[in-house]
Length: 311
Image 1 (cartoon, rainbow, N blue to C red):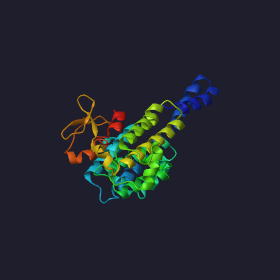
Image 2: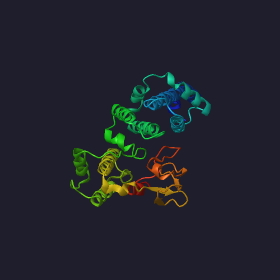
Image 3: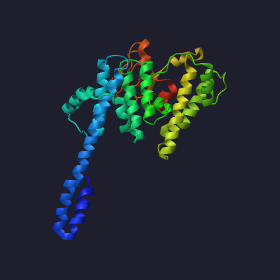
Image 4: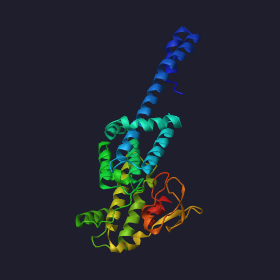
């Protein structure tokens, strides 16, 4: 309960004795607190409506949205509704989602709602990645759309890519010479470093800058370490792309559902999502790299270094 209005009203009413203070508190609650509650509810409903429309706008970038995209969007909005204090019933939320198509330029409208709150902006980028991967790996148009939104929302490209680590697998296209040199500089290894040296450098750097190791520090420091961690992961992925030295990169690890321990990702293994804990049976070998949790869209299997950190 918000006591601001009661305090204001009570202070004014106290000039008229004890009964005046009680009456003033009641009036303050009715006038000030209820106005604030109404304003907060209106803001929450606006965020829900515009987010719904923005997610459907992204889903339409690669054509008409699919049932899987629709399922992911409804799950995300249900989570947001609960986070906001269950502002809408399930029926009201469904109606809002169905009516959200009437909002035009919704991605642009979402930007000013999330930009003042950096954590909310990061969360919005995660929601966009979840929709982008819900039916298949994101195409270039979807990726460009997410990165453009992140930029307008005040986030760096590294922050946007860091938000995708649990959802997007890297491309198999070989890195250019310039990209490889930049990645080597980030990891601190020579240009012709072998796979073992690259993996060792990645493991050491990622353990040093992993956000969980800096959770108790100043928010600005945490932000810098999270950005650095994203750069390290991006550099490692760049050096892995299309390289024969990283043939064993195809070996991925999942969390075994019954024991909670890491296990090689094999077809039919019952795995537990690293993010939300849902149990999922892994698909045939050719689909393992893109296997995702149906509840939160996170990838189910990762290369050993990242899997160990997530576990």
